Image (cartoon, rainbow, N blue to C red; front, side, top):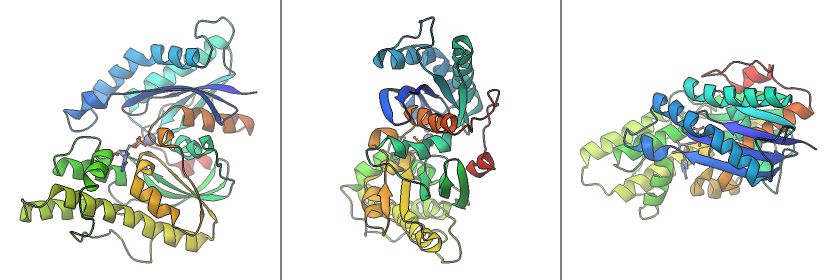
Amino acid sequence: MSLILGIESSCDETATAVVRDGTEVLSNVVVSQIDVHRSFGGVVPEIASRMHTEVIYQLAEKALTDAGLSLKSDQAPVTAVAATFGPGLMGSLLVGLGFGRALAAAWKIPFVPVHHIEGHLFSSFLSEKKPEFPFLALIVSGGHTQIVQCHAPHEYTILATTRDDAVGECFDKVARLLGLPYPGGPSIQKKAKDGDPTAYQFPRGLATKDTLDFSFSGLKTAVLYKLRKEPEASIADVAASFQYTAIDSLILKLHQAIEQTGLQRLVIAGGVAANELLRERAASLDVDLYLPPFAYCLDNAAMIAAAAHSRLRLGKNQPQDTAAVSTLSLQELSA
Ligand code: KG4
Ligand code: ZN
């Protein structure tokens, strides 16, 4: 049996979890710093790392007690500890990575450094319906927008990436233009419910057949110009039209990627996978769809433990002394 304590501290959420055999979540604790960063309109790295330091011990203790285990036990209460080593904010990563590595050393058990995006991919294994390899994955978060061909566990080819903003970042920036609170994804989704998605026509970046890559900066600029030209425009209509276009751009490229690869299974993961319109539109694609439960779309540590379980099981653990990295593509990881 494997019992893994996962730790995630790459951005503005401190998270811990205990997962049995890579799929069964025994506890899942997330403390968000959003309220503190909101007044700055985005994440302030120095504040983020300080806040992780303040809560990490208590959160590890809570994840273990929620799972019926103890942090203070002499004997290791888990079989391994895993923590995100990147990509993310350097100071924030160092908190979880250092804490996790120290716990594993004290308990004399393996430490598993986990790539944040690989964690998002493995969140789909926390659902009732689990994907089988090979599959296509759309990773949509605040920092990433990628289509990844997942050949086998930990073997990836990146088929598409964004040439500028990530889709989550675009939701966050447009929300700011509309005067809606950070994070932008949920607030735009909420506002869009009262608006007409056909009220405005916004451009879909790189909407040609010759690339699978994404571009979202033109869409953001188009919203900015629309608001300048029509300051009295309905915020709900702009939010709905923007959301429709952003999601439609993702669906368009997914169509192309499915056609190109012939893959039958599609995983969607990352914060934007919580978007209701994306979930609804993706369900009508001609593939078997795998979505993480809502709770595991946003940053969490259960997904980190799930990815760690697979690496340990297959003997593919990263070196225990892996350093924190602010950027590293999933493909480099599998090379
Ligand atoms: O994966 P995540 O929690 O953190 C990163 O790794 O970046 O994703 C956060 C991103 C934010 O940009 C947020 O606005 C977006 O996910 N997001 C959403 C929704 N919920 C969160 N975007 C669109 N619709 C949502 N419902
Ligand atoms: Zn994330």
